Image (cartoon, rainbow, N blue to C red; front, side, top):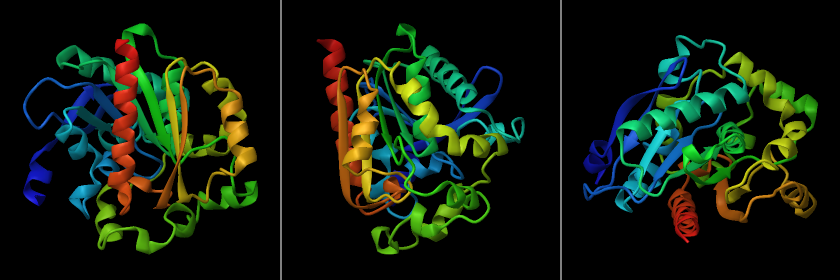
Length: 289
């Protein structure tokens, strides 16, 4: 199983407009055309490998999606991976969204994309996914957007949030260590990376931007909050605030038990990813109706 896990996923480079983006790609295991394409965007301080967890093959979103007949593309966001050399300070959210959309169009120019694309984002990658969805055009063939580890209101006070830039708190980002397979933290070093300065500067500002971004999204949206999510508020008042500005045709807000902020690396990752693929299939069916 571990050998297949490694062979199924390969590195790719795509044209992001002004800068090349690297990433990981898994195509349908049966060799047939994909039902759709899943494009995944990692959070701050990580890379595309977040979606292909090295500690346990069952945590890989890329392999699971490929086995289910989808193409799965995890991009190193602008300022990470290959683009870190040309973008040492990173990009703003708006610039990242444009770059990601360009890379997805470049992928579509050379590959079958099936019914279209689902944007998947974790943490800051979720902000980029939502921003990209807000500016999508019909040519993007966007089916929906699925995000985790991001909300509308911070659960930590501003002074503590600012301190996290210089001294991350594992309790906030990971939760209980027992939520993760053995060796997760050692092997995760492979895809840990410095947070680009321009990205870091914008982190506190998201609650003030959230409503303007999401009200422009015209495709289905799914939010998932982990049981041990400590960075974002997800109590009933916070969830009412989260959904108040949405104009999407379908909204899902899910709760993932036994999971921390880095939901795709934990023991519950497979369950979360199966729900994600269920949402993708729902979006695919709506688009075909």
